[in-house]
Image 1: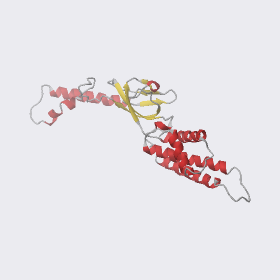
Image 2 (image 1 turned 180 degrees about the vertical axis):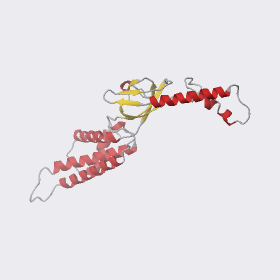
Image 3 (image 1 turned 120 degrees about the vertical axis):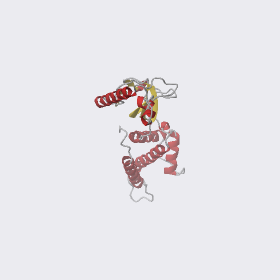
Image 4 (image 1 turned 45 degrees about the vertical axis):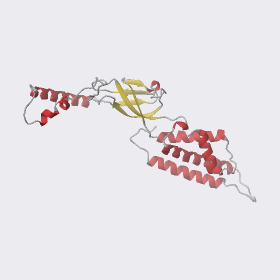
Length: 245
């Protein structure tokens, strides 16, 4: 949905298509932008991008599959694009676990390979080395510096050619939000903020001995109540596994 669709639905809900609204399109756009800015910190829908590995990656230069620069709000997880047990034909850089290759030997009651005992001892030494490395340096540990938009990744051993990043995107435009849930939450936030704005406009002056009275205070109370309910819902349903910004 673009801004015009948000404006049309806001006007329909608050005027029924019959009444006039005190806010023009420019003012409604500012309300929509304010709602997007507030709800941005709660959005937890993630995207995935695979890029060449580097210990320090400047995410401002990374492009998605459509060739557009990605916009990162926070980084959720890091994955190896090619795992330790990479046996695909197109990737030859993966390291194979020796026990994975010879696991049938461990389950066999008869027969053995030549010098298999030495092979097992070498595996135990290799596995112990991996444990020591993971104790002294955590593989795939990362830190995202939002100020410089740079991602720092630690690799214990076997540097990968590519790395896969799962990140929460930053939305600068309402039409970039494609999740039905977050479109609905943003629309509810827009309607509530519009009610508050209209309520403050209509309750600026009060009339005495008038035949007609504006509904400014009523719509202001409705807007504040809806805002409080939406904010409480967002806070209670925030996924704490993702960093908050």
